[in-house]
Length: 210
Image (tube, rainbow, N blue to C red; front, side, top):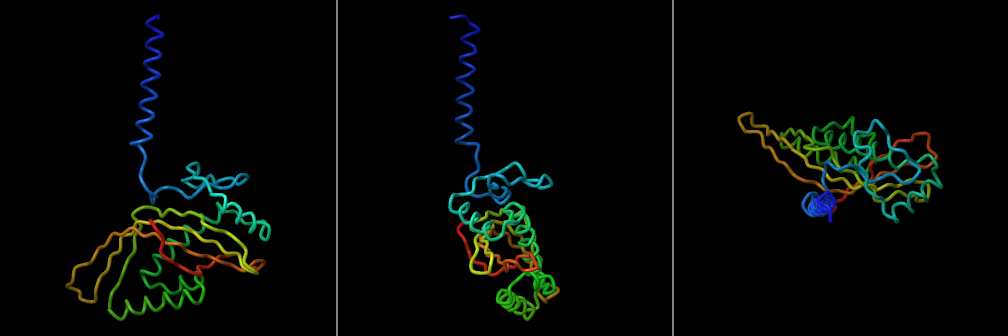
């Protein structure tokens, strides 16, 4: 066998072995906060301004079926654009809750959620604490469900985020407490179908598996 042919064969074998090693060792384990949201369904174009455009995952069959059902009632629903808005809303709500910004929170929450958040803010204020929430990485958002229920559009988004909370007590001499934590939650957003206001509001939060 000619030497050149042997070299080509050995090079091909080496490339294959390196590729297999990368598949085993080069991938991150688990859902990473800096990863982008799931892929858009066929026929939906990613926003070119989105820095994560091009890095996509695949929506499962159940989610795709639910999206189809919602689009039948609301043809303008765009899952990619919705997730972009959901990520922005998530960050805004987390920061506003930490800082006690009721004015920012009120139009983004249902009355029930607002009452729950208000209780948490009031309790923190009663302790004389101030808090700042920072995102270590942009939160990952995955669309779990998008459907129509009676006259409402309902969408569930799974958020995975790494947060840094800075808490200062009323005691000026006390040191600022800094906590970093990984948070996984399902947020349910909803809006009235056919309403003049196209904005979604947060209707429920619940813990999720990381």
